[in-house]
Length: 106
Image (spheres, rainbow, N blue to C red):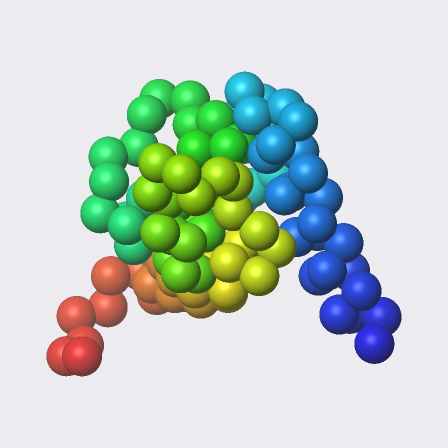
């Protein structure tokens, strides 16, 4: 139960900060691998300094947020679903980096 509370707090905190302080740098809240994974999964080119709200919208798109003109800001559920995909991709990138380029067939 305590683990779910921590995850829910992080999602709610990110959602609130993305709405109130959209110009904060994403590096303050996300690991570099998480940022890179979000941009790789959405097939978009990352800017030099990604903003928090821009990254949250990408993460929410992975969770089902459509990001249409009248949709407003993403909610907790789409951010949470997107974060699960981003975390899996970031962990995969870390494991591949630690593997050291082993030329095994996949």
